[in-house]
Image 1: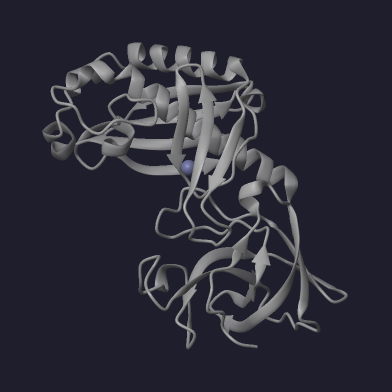
Image 2: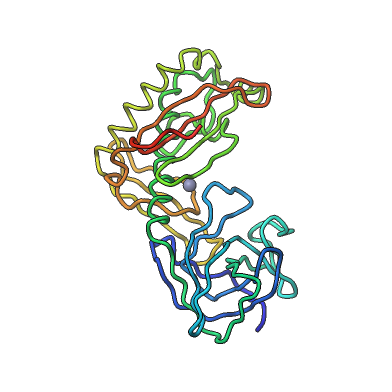
Length: 292
Ligand SMILES: [Zn+2]
């Protein structure tokens, strides 16, 4: 077995829940046995922007089924494999391949060079709904705060000032929900944002909720556009909303129609973040307690 010189082919952007593949490489790493396949349906967590966690599932090799105990972005120069936060180079670095590292139990023994990846469909579907809700809520938030800028920052996918890009500190995709944390520190104010706009957070929330619900009611189609099938090929979340088609760079997985988001609500919670004013924007399914 040899380390690959090209990126893993990824099938999850098109919604695949299983894949048959060749085993290219396996080696023990911290936390288990790292297995590289030529292609996979498993979405890995990316330590560079770990918003969406790894898929759950199993890898079947020969007659043995192993649980997928982790799935993370890795990279190799053909000599060594680096996993997760240990990757020493940026994506696109000449001579490096970025790979999906499937983590199997440390005592796994691979009896074949053919593998089948099977993904937990319910978990995938719920994360996809949460991720689409996250994008949609960020667009609604940008629009609700569009009047709060003294100068124009860059525009978002629908042409509103991109508060989300300027102020989002951390984004976490949950099952049928999401948690985004925004911090309005000095750099956000210097970019031209007036924090007074957040004085009545309930009014901002009401505006976000209205737009968010109206967009979900359109039942618009969501798709992923990709420049290629490799792990690091650029991909976009695309959604045809009434005011235009939104395209957001995104490596995650998503709902296929906004009808899947019915019952998802959005809330804003004031919170201080590292000494600056801020708030959390939470999307969650209506029958579930909000994540705080
Ligand atoms: Zn995304």
